[in-house]
Amino acid sequence: MSFLISCPNCGARSVYEFRFGGEIHDRPPVSASEDEWTQYLYARKNKSGPQEEWWYHRAGCRTWFKAVRETATNTVIETRWP
Image 1 (cartoon, one colour):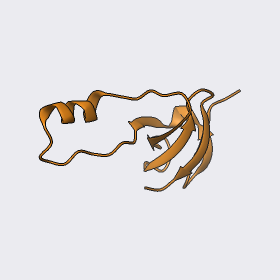
Image 2: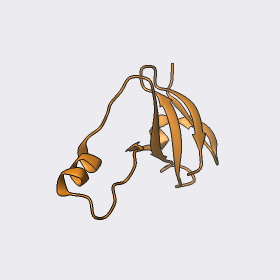
Image 3: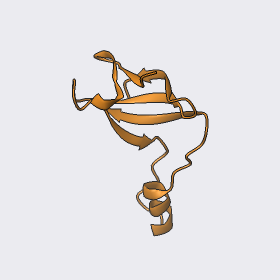
Image 4: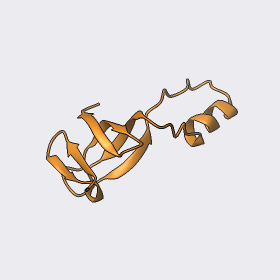
């Protein structure tokens, strides 16, 4: 079974055409403490189940988009523009 991601612009492609950009989570305010920024930049939930993520189509249209991926099976449920 291959791992496919459906780019909103180019359609379904192999995961090897993309770059994973990380989990999507809320950015802290500019006035946030150093600990809050550290949590934002480095801490990941790494949960099992659907997770909203950033993906970059580096070997195609070179655009960033959002995807919802089932982390237990690497099944991409949905992709959309930000």
